Image 1 (cartoon, one colour):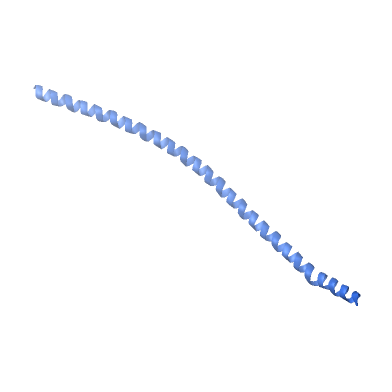
Image 2 (cartoon, rainbow, N blue to C red):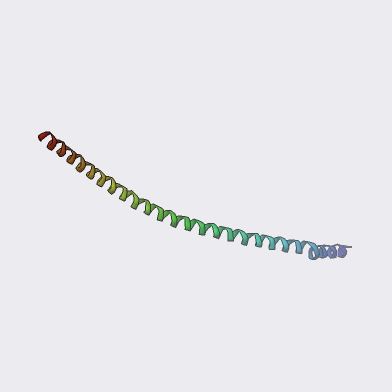
Length: 95
């Protein structure tokens, strides 16, 4: 009778357990590859976002500098216009 038990166990192993184990392993491998592709895609998106962020920060720095220059020029023009208005008023009062 032990021989029958061993035969049943080997058939059970060969017919059911081994194919299930192979199927689980194949499913695991497939899922692992799918996750690996998703992680690679996320890494690519992160790289692109870092590049874009760096570019936007550089552009912001340029625009901030341009704005400061324009504000300074605006202040200089305002001061010159006020000076001209003052001279015109002085000339008007002197006439």
